[in-house]
Image 1 (cartoon, rainbow, N blue to C red):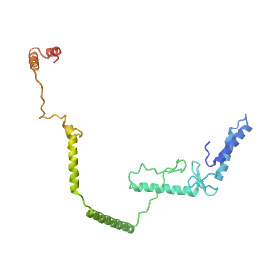
Image 2 (spheres, rainbow, N blue to C red):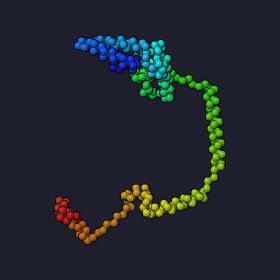
Image 3 (cartoon, rainbow, N blue to C red):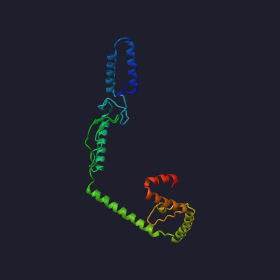
Length: 241
């Protein structure tokens, strides 16, 4: 049972009355009687509106109370303010996008309690644009503030004095440390790392040539010339060349 429109005290009272009704009619078909009793009880307490308003959290009286389609109760004035606030928020979202590409903007009106959609689409409330005179005054103030900031910056730059000699000494000392670290391999040169395995037309490789290598080379030439590649493969297996 989800009690909407009644307080926790009324909910406990209804539960006790239903239990009492079931005990008094034990062995009899009382399902319809229980449902009818719950309906009458809830209707009676709906008119009294014993819960606090879910929007302003103030106690509700029987006067000035409205119900949503999902059976949640609130002050009529609070519900009207909720609708107005939703429409203003929608107007701000649409205005922020320049009323373009707004298909994904939620235009619905939802219940303030359970967020169920009460209306699929509501009309947005658009904020009026400021008068031209006010905009001129604001732009004039912005120009004055910008000009004053520039004056402050120029004054601060004029008062600034940089010690170039000390800066050069620091750079020289840091360069000495850098060279020492580079000699020890503590600094990785990214450019050298990229070129380390790069092969170009100027790359020269040194091969150690022995007499055995030369002899094997001539053997390969003779085998290919006389017997073909099939015999060369068998010779490779024997020589492990």
